[in-house]
Length: 170
Image (cartoon, rainbow, N blue to C red):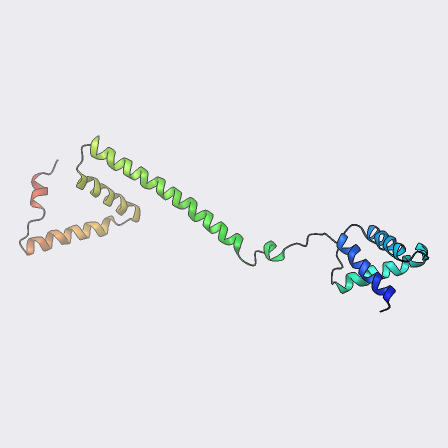
């Protein structure tokens, strides 16, 4: 490279970094070149400057418009899975909030049953257990377990159910 072409290359780099349209970049390079070389004519260097800018852009591997934001493909296609993770975290958070609200409702119903319904804490716990059995459709399994408890307790002479049978409300 000759010193003149080196100066053109450096001024083209400054013009590209300065941004703007290609015509604006070319005008900056021409003005800078004319300031450095007073005897030169703008018409003579116009083609050379355009070629220098194009070559400079090729060398810097940026044939795009300067100051243009390149799309982030990893963000666009969620390659790092951040959007998916955020989605799951949001869903878990919402479900946990719902769970907390439901647990608070269960506590309120339990307190209401204890005070207004005049049920003992043991009876309230049994109500919860039976509700769980209903939800999980385990009524038959629970009935089998109770029948087995009655049979086993009779066999070993442990009276588990006599108190409940005497105090049974019909």
